[in-house]
Image 1 (cartoon, rainbow, N blue to C red):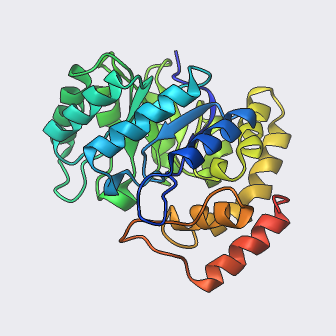
Image 2 (spheres, rainbow, N blue to C red; image 1 turned 180 degrees about the vertical axis):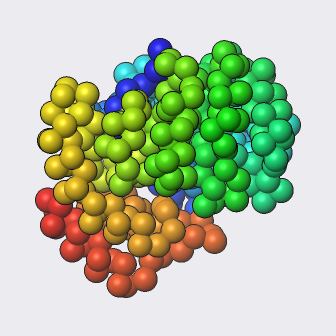
Length: 293
């Protein structure tokens, strides 16, 4: 069974001006997401700036999310690392914190061969008893999970899905062709939701959902309900907004958009910093055009 079907939000982590986690605001964002129909919450992913957190902070944020959600939707914890032992430790702690599943990015900087990826992911999968979503995002990590490698990893009972963010629809199609029917594929790109659904995907792990949870959920739900034209219309309508959210490196624009909306302050941890003024102008324009403001 799929961990979830629909639109899962790769939720931001709000910070105070001193850099500490703003848990009160985090709770508000979680409640708003659930009220708006989000199908899953991905805590401490790329958009959640987990790369700047200590291990203790990361597990505290995941634990808070689990406690706040109270089982209403699945909580998927980012627990990836470029050090397999570190990834194992994070994954074990995230499972103890109550996460329903884990999101595991490919090792970055030191990278890995495809053989190394298989050993890395199997070692992590052996250490836990909850499902794992592979996360292939070559643009950030320099490593691509090849379709043949996905097929090999899908043999492990705990490896049940992939977040495909390569931007290569042909690769997505090849994965869909080769994996077992019960292996889930989630789009990691908001501008490719409907194309991936058309290949049999189960949904999206979304940045757009941070500012438009209801609309993103509806794109996927309409497709599942057979309203393909409605899903495509929603996808195309969101395209300029999606482009604006990636005008600078994620999550800078999406945090800026939430600030414009009055939902969360635009505080970052270096090396991320405030966007250019031109980005702010673009975001405000597209938020109005999309009907959010």
